[in-house]
Length: 177
Image (tube, rainbow, N blue to C red):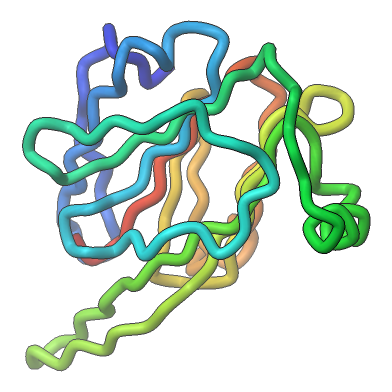
């Protein structure tokens, strides 16, 4: 688990850069789902859609990461009619909480060329059968779950991460840190 009590360790990216993983706030050790997004390179652009209410958020001391926490035991969610219709279309992906995170990541090429693009990551916590997932087609965004599964669309078959771990935590970051 990537909890407040575990030691943060870096993850290697495609260019052998090391992404320093965050230490999650203590609330993530309890009955909460945590979604941590990278702030360091101004990657996190906000939620495009969010079909639940975050219980709160916490930034790390260095302002490199923001962790949103969602109460896994409280399912009292107010959803507008428009969002409810969208949720019905996404019924296989919805559960306790679902949404889309907008991120802007840069891709660095040899010779110093940098191309910036915006991508989306779909996520859902506690779907039918207790499954949680993240999905992206953006090859510059990577993710990690608290059971150490990796989300990486650049590898071809890792554009969807599905886990059945209870109260899972997800981390999203740009591969070119």
